[in-house]
Length: 118
Image (cartoon, rainbow, N blue to C red; front, side, top):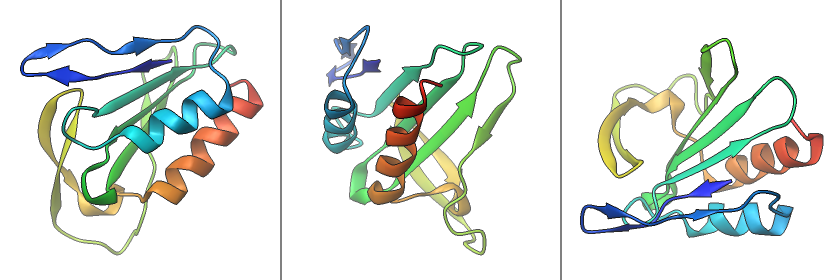
């Protein structure tokens, strides 16, 4: 697990090799879209990777991918339109509103990813 933390333009996050579910969910809860903007989890089976970005205003983006290089984004409200500004990895960018998910959904996805040993 890697959880970023920014101070000005310097990233000095935390890396944990075998995080507990409590560690991971705690890192999700700390995402604020400002100092803490990205959580990266790497699973065991065929290099899956789950990334959670954002956190400001309770708005997150979740991507899942693997060794193939193909990544999918979790859809929050498929009927949502427009763009939302999200900061992930210290970089702000516009994301289609349908890809914005709330903290409850992020916690469910992250919990399943960790428990399944993805």
